Image 1 (cartoon, rainbow, N blue to C red):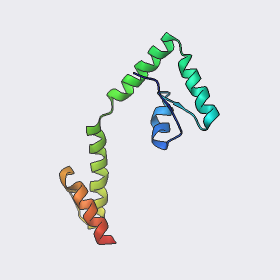
Image 2 (image 1 turned 135 degrees about the vertical axis):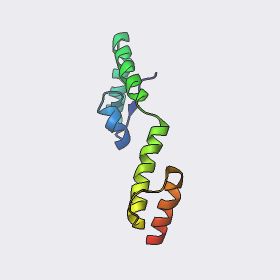
Image 3 (image 1 turned 90 degrees about the horizontal axis):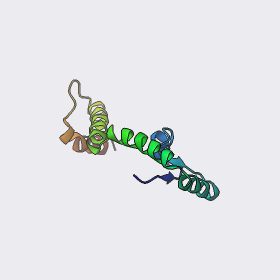
Image 4 (image 1 turned 90 degrees about the vertical axis):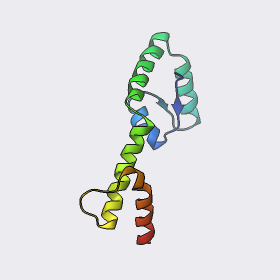
Length: 105
């Protein structure tokens, strides 16, 4: 529930900065200004931002992030191993990807 000011880290800028969930500041002066703007928010502005943040975070979870990452790893591993059809399951993804990369090197 706390407001966030971040430096322009790519994974923070998009989606969080782009969606107005956090303020992004590049440089000392911009960071101070963003902090001051955050502290100057009215109660209504804070509440509106929090509604947006809560909605965005409700669509995210570590489980969903892992599923998306495992799917990408499965795809790379399957292509590198020349497999057709089904890629290995999520539990085998990391091992397959590491094996495929090691074999390629």
